[in-house]
Length: 280
Image 1: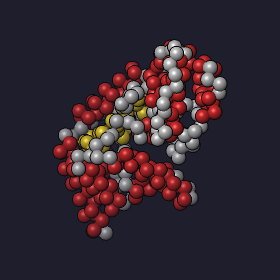
Image 2: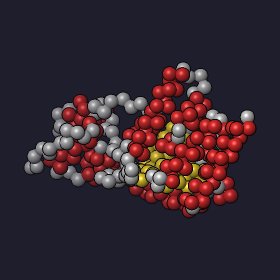
Image 3: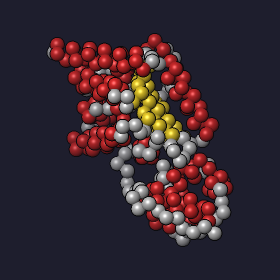
Image 4: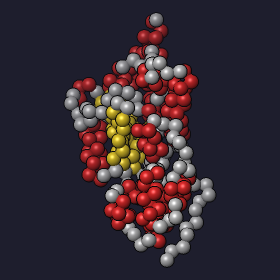
């Protein structure tokens, strides 16, 4: 019988709990698929829990304790990571961004959150919450900008974003806000920190017309897809669904302008906004 594994004291609480789950499963002589079948979840999901890329919810924690005979360990510790600062429908996806090795994102109307500037994010959050106190909007903006700290690393994660031309043309906040937002994206692209494409209006109908799409890949867990709608979001880990989402993203990217042409368009539109602001 394998003994307890040494845990990294600098790892996140979720990574520590995931490591304990892997140890308990192996001690019980179960594969990820076998444990998943017993809990009516996928082997992929079990792998993500063990990798620490997904959180263990309270109900599942109790079932894990019962199935693996862990004496209430998971029930006691499943709340260790603490309450998320993000909306419930997005909390888990935001946390997975922080450990992803590759992120691919498309949004039909907005600049993706990881690429937003503070003024742009504030205008979006205020539009969603027109009567909210300023302090609450400040918290939303801070949480959104905090996600972008992952781009401080020179190479990881790989971020590949397809911007819809609508996101470039829709004036969010003001002309000055848009000029700054697009120049920010262009600067990231010119530093080779992100891959950016623009899906032009001339592309017509495409594979992700119905909404935004985000794909995330990990070094030690299967990939997931995240689809978001009005006030809702769904993480997908079923391999068949993820494969369909990957195909949809690939088709969108194939219909988009090449990165150099996309960068030229982004900078051109930014200049148009800057000129408009100077005319006021």
